Amino acid sequence: MNINEIKSKLAKLLRLSKSSNANEAAVAIQKFETLCVQHGVAKQDITADFDPELDVIIETSFGKTYKKRDIAIYRLIAAVAKYYNGVLMIDNDRLDGKQLKIIASKSNQIQIELYSEYLIDEMERLSKQAKKENKHTPRSFRANFRKGFASAIDRRLIELKKVQESQIPNWYQETSQSLDNQPALVVVEHNRREQKAALSFMLEKYPDIRRSTSHYKAGTGHNEGKNAAQGVGLRKQTEGVTSPTRALTGS
Image (cartoon, rainbow, N blue to C red; front, side):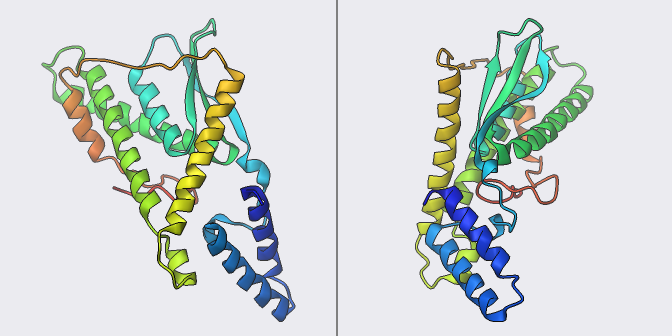
């Protein structure tokens, strides 16, 4: 069975667990918990109305078009997309500017959009505040601050995901006597599979796409931006939003 078939079966068992027949409900919940452990699926990730279409890879446009290249914005959104097993693509063929496109599973698109908007707002707010507090700095101070901020957030999300992928979930400990790292490996495998699917989607639709790399000199303001990013909460900003591994937690 593929992951969608597994989740569909688990959703059906979850619905049966609400049965008025006590015996049927008990058997269903026992089977549900057994299959969760067997396939490394977090119980909290399954709902009775699970829709397999949410795992389909789609492409959406993000925000406005940009007249000029904005390295900080690009890196920030790319970092969030990567955290949620997606990829960021820049469409340079539009006449009105550069359009950012996010390629990820349907279920992860909203998370990427919400967290990107939150982090962009924080970056702009903190960079403006820092510029006001450092009036006698070069004109490039704020641009450098933003690049430093995006760089630090990128690194924090990479480290956060590594930690989450290495942890044995509480739900597994509660339903299994064995505490090996199998669930963690399943999570890693799931994330890699989603990442591969998003990349394959992009390469199939845009076979001539070229990888973009950004090189810049870390000028005055860069370190201030990196330091400011360390104080930004990576907690979920909207209740009920979860990541491929679990909800974003503060670090």
